[in-house]
Amino acid sequence: MNRQNMVLALEAQDRALWDICIIGGGAAGLGVAVDAASRGFTTLLLEQHDFAKGTSSRATKLVHGGVRYLQQGNIKLVTEALHERGILWRNAPHLVKNMSFIVPNYKWWEGPFYGIGLKVYDWMAGNLGLGKSRLLSREETLELAPTLDDEGLRGGVLYHDGQFDDARLAIHLAMTAAEQGAVLLNYCRVEELPKTNGKVSGVVAVDEFSGKRYTINAKVVINATGVFTDSILQMDEPDAEPIIAPSQGVHIMLDKDFLPGGASILVPHTDDGRVLFAVPWHDRIIIGTTDTPVDHVDIEPRALPEEVDFILKQIGRYLKKTPTAADIRSVYAGLRPLVKSSSKKTAELAGDHLILVSDAGLVTVTGGKWTTYRRMAEDTVNTAIGKAGLPVKECITARLPIHGAPPGAVEEGPLHYHGTDAQAIRAIVKAHPLLGERLHHRLPYIRAEIVWAAREEMCMTLEDALSRRTRSLLLDAQAAIDAAPAVAALLAEELGMDAAWQDRQVEEFRSLAEGYLAASYFAKP
Image (cartoon, rainbow, N blue to C red):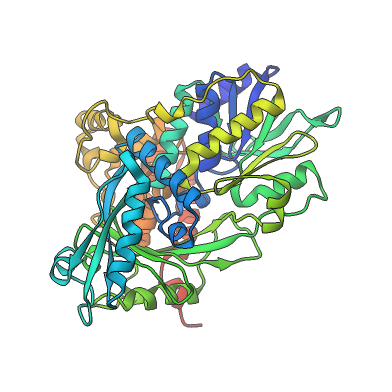
């Protein structure tokens, strides 16, 4: 998957009529691209930044059925999510793995209460379940999670859910869509929605690198822009009512010694009524999340100091050693595209996602979560087929392996999340042994992964490399800053850029990455 080849493919179809044009390269848009292309429709996806730049790379890294939805009694949503979790585990075994979760019990009633609920969770998962839940004694709980606060601990409940790498899944979905014949372009901004006889007939887009404008004709345009949904709706209808009420979720990253076992912790009830997770991920611990309504949508949202304080306070109640701001390796924030309740009355709400069609024929999909991205895409393409008069073709994504999925057992090791691409990355190291060196002693990535990203994964900037092709920025912001000059040099060599480009990239990345340092939230004025 090479960007220059994608530009050439777009230009080769300059006057052609695409079946489907998708705006947005996050979970929803990429899922739609895979679905549409695999049904045989000519498919184009345009993303104004990088794939999964926004919300879709800032999740809690869980593929889950929604324990909190079970608590709320939303059985339909839990059932659908558990089913989709199983499909994703089957189609991308190199990216999704089984994770044990412990709900610690400090009151006599918590064991039977959560135990019964999680048995229902098992039953609803059926043959796509990841493992059986069970009650744990106090000793078993501390054996699995030795750093839990043991004062008053009665025991725990163990259950199973899925864990994944969100940005890595996004890149592999883009590669899957390309293999199915889709054309995808990052850094290509949609500026207009031209109309013919009152109907949206395509898009006008600008390549952010070349500055070239493209007028693209399509039978149907799909708005899959997440928290930016309203901006595209208003491009279609300037007086369109906003339908998104964005909410911010914040996570912090700690060293593994705060939770050295292999299990995750679920805190079932925080002060604000949400659940809190502490999840092992890439040899770190992710803790989150918050739920803070925000008025302004930003491509690079920043956590509030009180959100970071909240997470530290809540998790500190359950650990022997209370983490402080000095222990945080990175802080990251994401915006959820929550749909305003008033919008649901006039549109189709399928599961936890919303699909609507404007008078001009623009199809919009929003809401949802990574776990159900495939179902969301299927519903969206089905809607697009009906509205655009496309030939009815069956969805095949429930059985379509995602790029990198191995035919047999998943290979363990530091490159396992590349799946079958790991062999090609090892071949790069074999040809150039120095590329086997790590980017930084606190990061798990090697230099060859950057080379591979530039050659095959449309990695165009230093931020792409350190935030999404590797997860360096999220794992350890200071280590990512330290590694930036060497990574910029690797990218420059692959992309044919000069020293001035390297310097600009390093400076821009440092400015962005400093916002992920805990010190930036607690610096004294």
